[in-house]
Length: 263
Image (tube, rainbow, N blue to C red):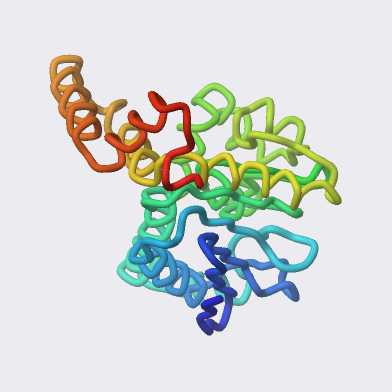
């Protein structure tokens, strides 16, 4: 097992599963500039690891992530525009780094995900939440807006529901978050790990390169014209069919056996 030392997160790579845990339970895993920088670093590291097949993101203790740390916000309050912009860009970079990871990501939502913490749920591919988890886009309650997380939440929940959630800042139950599309599955807290493991195994049974290219499709296709998308998608499937993984997958299917990556 590989384990890297960070101040605000715990990173472990055991066999083919990477686990990233927010490790500030005393402040409900609220993030600050250090955590943002460390998350950027750890997802760069994970992308380099060919053996890593799935990433599980969670929080230590009772909360997933309570959003921005209050002590960090006290400093930010007095920043110049330039300093605010620099740190906001860093936050945007961190969110996109997780969203665009070449590895499939699962948010193991063990407790409250508030403000930017809800954004960390949205940037993951799949979110499994304990039925006791709570969610909120609470920024408007303190005169702010959910700016950097908005692209990812709108993608998952749609503009109509985000108009309600962003403008009211209401507290959402796990069930309502699931109905909105923010969460994929809601289970009892004591079933959370078994359910995450089930999704991990499903993801590991798929071709690693195919999963990566599927994530690229999901990022690219919605922004393309129909003429562009015809060419792009035809090229992608032609490339995959010719790849070693595609050849092995088709041969395994025809021979009625498991492909090598799933043996």
